[in-house]
Length: 294
Ligand SMILES: NC(=O)c1ccc[n+]([C@@H]2O[C@H](COP(=O)([O-])OP(=O)(O)OC[C@H]3O[C@@H](n4cnc5c(N)ncnc54)[C@H](OP(=O)(O)O)[C@@H]3O)[C@@H](O)[C@H]2O)c1
Image (cartoon, rainbow, N blue to C red; front, top):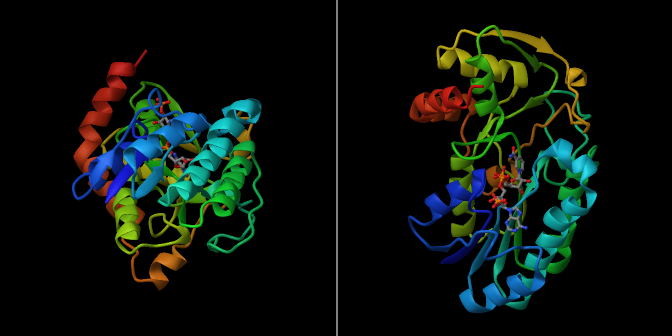
């Protein structure tokens, strides 16, 4: 397959580029060469490259910034995906688009998860933009896959795991981490393998893809610090104690029901993948955090 990856410099896109290029022809232009906001650039690239699959890993993912940057959020998270959906339809290729747990309001009781056909009710501007991106894809691209994922981490880009490591190594720092937001930490590398599996099965429709099992942010942070032997002071707090602008869902649990029903779920337990990630990159994360230390 010829796969055009957008957002390949980001956390998920970089993993997809590495994993998918093992078996497929991958073309991964950067934003300068293919800005998804530009209809002309989208059409010109699709015409020249003629891909079988367009994989959209682009996103404005700073949830708090999204509250105040309405114009930018709409452009990147909604109009960009609409351009890709209309372009993919015109050139008859499959569009794989990444969405988020933040399309839900998180009001279900833990441990009840959200299913693919549950009603969206986003609490934040980011969540609303992701919900609208899904609509834009469904309405414009007959051959699409929408993948909702959550709590991504990886070696590239900023994420919760990296933030815990960099705070954890600071002397006399007391980490305060919410124990009332629940989710499934998901390795971007594993998700890239799940995307490959979906492509191999010529999947269509909306899928949930997160790690199996769940924890709260505080438990996850404690787990990471312990695994890496970082002796830091850590205290539980509430999501409400954060100064962030966006309201976040308390329950971010997504059930991979469709993947399981179709026998194509390759996602693992969150601890199993986090162990593998920390084994591979733990030292590098500490080194990176020390280099950034003020
Ligand atoms: N991170 C999470 O925990 C999480 C959870 C659920 C769902 N998701 C979804 O997963 C997807 C990937 O997230 P991520 O965390 O990997 O994102 P990321 O690390 O922030 O990467 C975003 C990528 O998009 C590119 N980009 C931004 N604007 C662009 C534009 N106009 N045209 C082309 N490229 C553009 C960026 O390029 P530059 O670096 O050059 O700006 C970067 O490569 C997003 O759709 C996100 O909503 C993420």
